[in-house]
Length: 352
Image: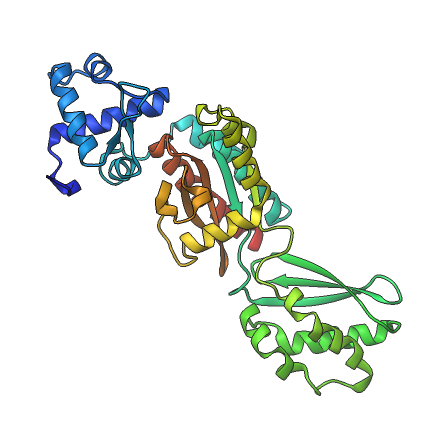
């Protein structure tokens, strides 16, 4: 019995390709007569049926009990993506739509990331996700302290890529404007130019006992709040997700329980962000695809995830889609690649 994908004959590859094309198009199990009528292969339905049976035996196709047709397995989709799918390509009109949507003078990275998520979902008809850049390797540009009230202090953190984070702190004693300015100057002298990782690891050493005693209450509060101030990802900005209404109207979600499962997944951004971080390395430069059980996370076994990193200075985030395994892989890959490239260029403009 053959078990190696490399051993597939050209006829077997052709049949597998056409079964997957038809299944992606119709969402219905594909029969040999359907393939015979749709594609000019010069093969009889009986011959095609025998080849499909061989592909099933090898694990590339499955045979639902309620149908005479066959559907692709995770292994079948993987072989298709790696060896059989058409070259990723977007229509000229789609590229123009992406450029028209994203090539704007954005006031903030957030606006660009949210719009990129919306555009990706519209192009692919899938659930799109854009994660916020990680701050682990971000370099601090400056810290600004703003007095909100006698005991409330706003900390504005700006990193060199242009991203801004704000944190509100509360003191037990009254704030004096002169002291706030002195602390701000002191903090920038000690921390500007360091990465968030360096700051978290060395902050007590850099600040302890090196400032005027009058400034110690504010310095102490800053030290106590350092985990929140220099956290890796902003609390409410971990990801932008778009396309819920598009994905739930696909045939795979005709079952009420499946709709509830995808909604539950969407509502918990932490799960999605954690999964992307665990599956797709931050250092990974190429587009990556996880199909079904390749995800090694039960909640994602019914889906395919396609992810590409985008850059914002020295930090990066992820842009990708989550959707049923029955998707237009070639077009989706092309859309993610092009949007990630366009987004990186636009984010560079914000940075400058």
